[in-house]
Image 1 (cartoon, rainbow, N blue to C red):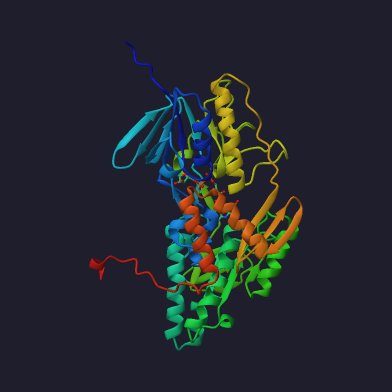
Image 2: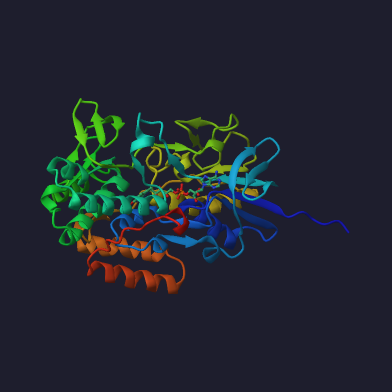
Length: 424
Ligand SMILES: Cc1cc2nc3c(=O)[nH]c(=O)nc-3n(C[C@H](O)[C@H](O)[C@H](O)COP(=O)(O)OP(=O)(O)OC[C@H]3O[C@@H](n4cnc5c(N)ncnc54)[C@H](O)[C@@H]3O)c2cc1C
């Protein structure tokens, strides 16, 4: 008897978009299809919560959730995709083995990586923020700088040690600055030589307002809040050169600081660069239904940060945000199923009902259905949104108590050694 080969949809990347897509496909794709999720990590990282790991408001385990807890039917492979042979519909990957899978449908949802080539000196002298490891590393360095400032008698050196420069005033830069300022204010009680006044948190941002994805009013509210808290913001300022403890701006101004955090400059993962794919600025250009290419038979799709998806509701390209990644995933699941069943796909169009950004100090800024507000209420909504995304009741309860406890507690200033005992 002939064995009927099962059909395969392969999703490359298990972040915001890939996981939601797999979840939606699990309940809607015909039963003779298998779903594969190929991802470098076996967990999703809730990137917008990473700054809270820097600020010691959250434990690292709380900003990640294992794919295997979130997906039931999907075959999960923790592997790195090296390249995709589109002509033969084969994806090549490696982990402990080098292997491949033949697919019928493929979805690119691999996000972006830090572009260390963007500025001279960036790779050597700045700390990126993309993973939980990055967040813990930054937090550790901040604590180390406070400890160093405490034992230094040279005032100029102390000033440098307690100056923290953040490149980028988008979501991640703003959230990091807010958390950092909060952390320093809370930690200063333990450090005699370090007062809030002699610590500087500086944002260097290339355009005329913080978090351009927010409305102008919300950006202005964020700036006002930061000024009040002593966070320095350089708008329309581009860094030209990064050196040891030094950032030179295009204007010639030099900012000296012993910790430089980079939240700008993303680029596509290597395997995206393939002559089969239409790309612009390294991202995959899609049609309005998120399919790629112009063939009538739709089998190649892209979404999330690695793609440029037109928004049918605005005529513009979708911004690289978690909210859009999530919405695209839900819409794409329907389009993939429609296309498998030979039905028409639907253009992607979405206008967000609200925008939220956490700004530290148990505060956020929000605009929901046109109503703008900020402070603790916005912060609670921000937290509720992420609590809703965390899988399983057990994890939600743990996170809720952890958050509530951290809000009322001093920050944890333990310096993590990050060394094995045999390295000492
Ligand atoms: C610090 C920070 C703060 C942010 N704050 C906000 C915010 O407040 N609000 C907001 O809307 N957005 C925010 N964002 C942006 C948001 O996180 C992204 O828009 C969103 O994660 C995009 O989802 P994605 O699925 O495209 O990519 P990601 O969520 O990045 O997932 C990509 C996945 O692909 C995997 N992958 C990559 N390469 C390979 C490969 N070769 N093989 C296999 N797997 C691979 C990765 O391991 C990862 O699992 C923030 C981002 C950062 C970094």
